[in-house]
Structure formats: C-alpha cells, structure tokens
Length: 274
Image 1 (cartoon, rainbow, N blue to C red):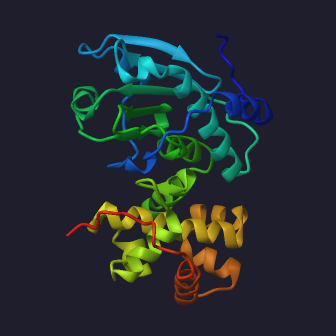
Image 2 (image 1 turned 30 degrees about the vertical axis):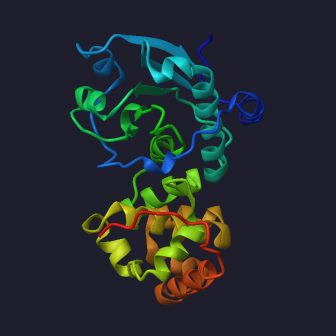
Image 3 (image 1 turned 135 degrees about the vertical axis):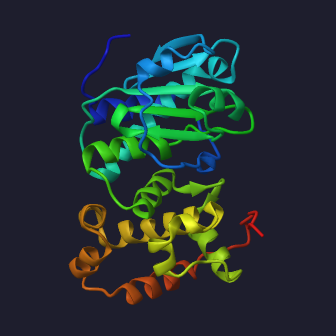
C-alpha cells in the first residue's frame, strides 16, 4: 500500500464506511500520562517482539502473528481510519499531515513487555505512536488514544482533564455506556465530583469516576457552545472559556447537571468503585 502523507477527509470517510468494524469498550483505555519517548523505531527494535506490518490510509499498523489483531486486521484498518475521521471532525481539521504508528498487543502482560506498563492503551503524541491491547474481551482501539496524538499535534498541550475529557468524548462512550446517562447515574449515586475537584485534582480520584464525568462535561460544552469555544478551553483554560461564553463556572456546572438530569439511567450497568 502506498504511503499517504495527507489524509483527505472525504476519501477516508467513504472507505471507513465500508471497512469500519465496531469495537465496543473503547472507554476501557486508561492513560497514565500521554507524553513519552517510545518512538516507532524503539518499539520495532524491542527484542521480545517480532512484528507483522500492515497499513491503512492513516496508520502503519504493527502486530504479532497468531494474535487477535492478525485475525481482525481488516476491521482494525477501517476502525483506525474511521476514528481519524471523527477526530478531525471534532477539531474542524480537513486533514492530518502525519502517518500514525499503531502497535497492537494481545494483553496487558505483552504491553508490560513493550512499554514497561500494564495498561490497555498508551499514546505518545510527540512520536506519533499509539499502543493498544486488543483481544476478545478488551478492544482498546477506539478514538481515545488517537485523539491525544492528533489533538496535541494540532492544538498543542492542555490541562489533563480537558485532554482526557475530549478523548473520552471522541469515543462518545465509556465502558460501553453512553456518557450523559452514565454521568446522570453517577449523579444519582452521589458520586460526581465538584467541578473544582474535577478540574484541579483530576488524578486524585478514581478514573472510573473522573473519565466518564469529564467526558460528559466536555461533550456538553462542545455540543452546547461549539468547537471554537472548546478550542479556547483547550488553549487558554476554563477562565477564558467562561469569559467567551459569558458564564460563570458555577453556572456552567449547574446547567450541565440540569442537562444530564433528563437522561434515562435504566439501561446503565456500571461498576462504581468502592
């Protein structure tokens, strides 16, 4: 397959529609810091791995023989290109002028061998590298990790809660649950954090709370106030966002809570941490 240096949004959308395989559970991805130094070359040289190479319009894809990825490579190609289409749409970008490098392993132990961390997914934006676990029970191949790579190359760095919230929103689910019904469920169970805690102490709380909550909050902000204001939030922070939309933090929080309160929680099935 030829190397494409520029991704045309319309072409990718057409191909993604025919190739895309639905990967549920993308929200299982958990990131412990998105900046790192694992380059494509460094991962390819890992002595514990013998990589098979494939490619899509947007990515070079590396996986091990006789693995889940090997058996599902057509769907993986389509899923990667479809994810990029959604991400570019969220960012209001027509193309991304870099190829991505996708390394897929069978389980968390193999991820430990690869990057010295047991995690379902990891993004290295500076290196254009994404690492993910994929098997019959975990499919860390949604838009989440790719969003970190693309957004941080297009928009630059931001606060962690914004970065993670938009990454969760790019998948539009968390643990196969829709974001607003899940956030409302957490509200009913009195487990939502205050906006101050969410934005200022993000890593002090369980990811099973912070990730869906910030995903729902960013979804609300994006769909209510638009991409241009979320870009202000990303680049300048919450104070600048509030100034741009003429809202106080407290008003934003209360209006978001009122909005999610309308969502039915009957079909939410979620493990709340103790």
